[in-house]
Length: 307
Image 1 (cartoon, rainbow, N blue to C red):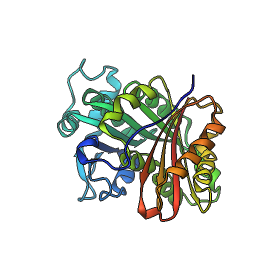
Image 2: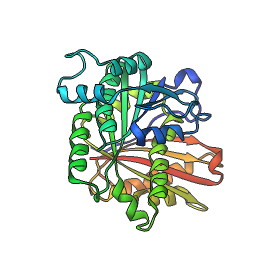
Image 3: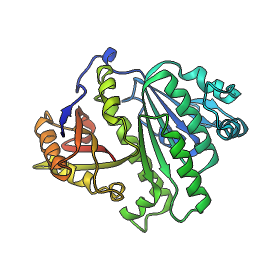
Image 4: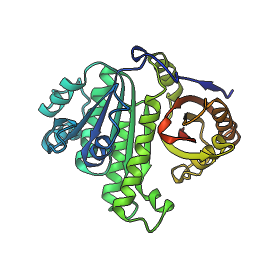
């Protein structure tokens, strides 16, 4: 039996918001984390995880390639082998937290090896772990793509949400998009679920969200904006046309955040949910509503669709 349920709170005391850590792992993950608006994410502790220090205004956890390689290739999970020195550094910084975001690019050695270790360590301490992972372009080597698939499969054992972003889908937006611009678009899209969920989720929601996402192997993202009359419906239609949703037809689990600029947002949210329900009438849906004056008179719909 399908259901549509609301979660979260548009306005909540800081005590109701979950304690949250975001780890930007490897080159791709670090780029995304370092560009997030820390002023609007005051309840999130953000760390870059990598082999070389750079931006001094972002907390940094130094790791070694050798440590991450040894941990990954051991085949043994955390708890059944000694932690490497790099894992101990990560472990000291994270500790008990309500919610984790792990952000990385899979396919490269640092991103793939380190994300698995971070996922295992995060799962020990948190109630809810969400991973956002970019995957290689189809034009990249088959070995790199196979490595990304292998890493994803292993990481999924330790995260509650694995949202995957194949880079090749950027070409569907604009096949002539310069590579640097393409990655800027990808970084923006990958940040949206974290920013929007952060503005609505409460501690009380976490057990329900954890159960809601249980059993879903992979999520894909849709995001869109609407303006003018019926902007909630317009935003949903744009989100539903996301190229990252093209790989599958029947999504069964939909996690959605409607972000409203001006106005209450309630009407826009209801319009958005009706449009999503028309697209996937057999899906279970959880949705939340948040305010963001920075988008002015527009409405944004961000959804994670799982199979």
